[in-house]
View (cartoon, rainbow, N blue to C red):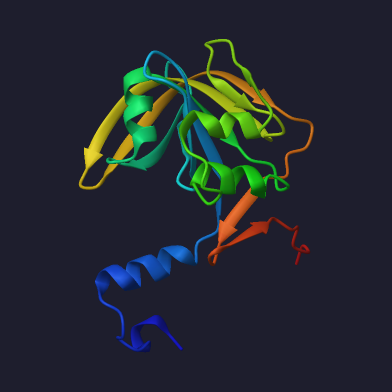
Length: 176
């Protein structure tokens, strides 16, 4: 059934949430450590901004009331860890699904400090060490832009995806 004739059972917000749930996005864990403490949070909103500025840059969004957001903003640095397709457990851990809070999450996973001290998750397919460039509050979320200072790449580029309310993996499609 075309979208314009779909039953109008949901309000605008409900339809928006349902529409966005249909998009497959890759899964990242944003980690931070510093004077404000250590924190990490799972996001599906991380994306590149530009490779061509004074430094490459990326962005993601975090809820303004999240303790991880407050910690990251105070620390002014972070690492965006693009998860490997076999890291569903890490995604669940940092999303809060395992009921382990704050810095205790890091006791459950392999990680190492990057060149600026930010936590790099073991097994991630790519990790981007960043300095905080800017954070803009847009209604309920901060849009956070990071200036990339270092990139770590694994030998296996298979990234974890999330779409249609489930974890996914990318598959190659036949050429037509």
